[in-house]
Image (cartoon, rainbow, N blue to C red; front, side, top):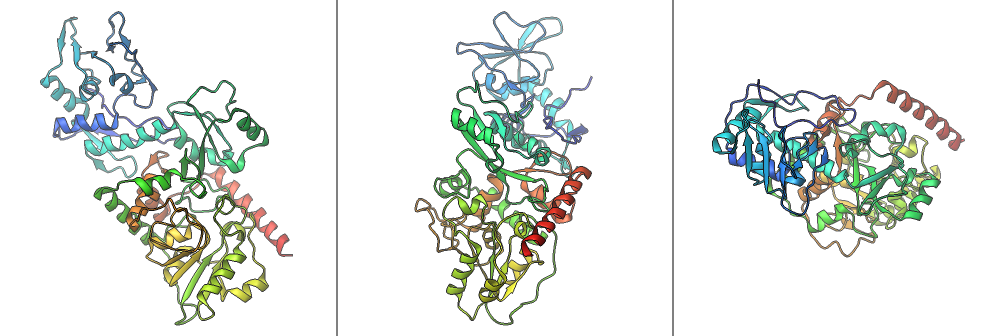
Length: 515
């Protein structure tokens, strides 16, 4: 009977699981390097299962059919890596591929033969198990169905492992809208059902709650105030979807931050800590550069996708300045550091650039859709802006203009990626690192100087979480950018109906406000 592959795709909720391995590998690898990769990523076996733990005293981790008295049972449905960190020995049946995990962790292995005899696992056993469970298989990338090598398969499992481990402390999840759950749930999964709305009574020490703060119910706010738990903030990611959150288009990426929201400058978020203290390898920076180029080539921004034709200059040879509006009651505006209104941003921009500049104002799409606050009166727009652009994609506008003036808008970061000068009047996450002209109250603790690729690596590669809309699996950002670029992020029928309804009522509200 053929040995099963040692690596597997975790059963993420809603995933359309695809083959991860088929027979027919080359059998070639450097065994020590493979074992080191398994140990560094802590994958293989049921690495998404409930952790198997052992006592403080020496113990044997036993996965045989006749375990030793006093041994800790190696449950195939459990995550063995916590126990392997402290076990003095592992005991397994001959030809059990889990022996590789113990060897990788530096734990001596006893093999039990079919006749009941026991012997120490040797180099020949390891070589045979590596071939049977790893290198005799052809590994398939679940996102593009192309072949990949064993090392890449281990790296991908490590990506899933880190996501799952980051969720293990979550005791309750609150404030997630029903229409977001199909895409958010896999990104919050820790091997068992995501605990939406769990009562905080009896919450263990060291646990935390994950919240989408803007959608908390009053009873949940009171419960949080009563129990005062550790809080993990959830927000939309920076590459979100082909459509508006206000229209109930589910996100393809989210941010999950235990330090606080990235847009609130009062305290350092995890993103700020990465930028202030992080180290960026040449490999990571090469990925960031390639990702940035793919985003530009695909015309991808937070809510938009697809290549667009170059826009003509609206004002001839005059200096073109783009001013993106924001939602004025959004937490990114109300959490400190930002100007209170789009009108004030426009006034300050006009004062700084002068009358000779051609100022283009682009209202926020959620405001245009009629869902949120932030409208500027027609009279004031005529006084301060040369043009109000409501139709053209933000990526195309950024490519056409000479510079941007922003409050705390993500458009400023998107403009930096496209090589445009950005003047910032608030204190967004990308200000203060030497890449922007800062007019706002940027925290003085941001003392590191960063390159553009370092900013992109921190902001898009290391910080958010992404979901592939095709496979339903958590994925690297490159996959989502590719899906959005080619238009393969279609919504299911039920989601399309919700989106259509939201857009209809948004137009009604917009018409009422304009009346």
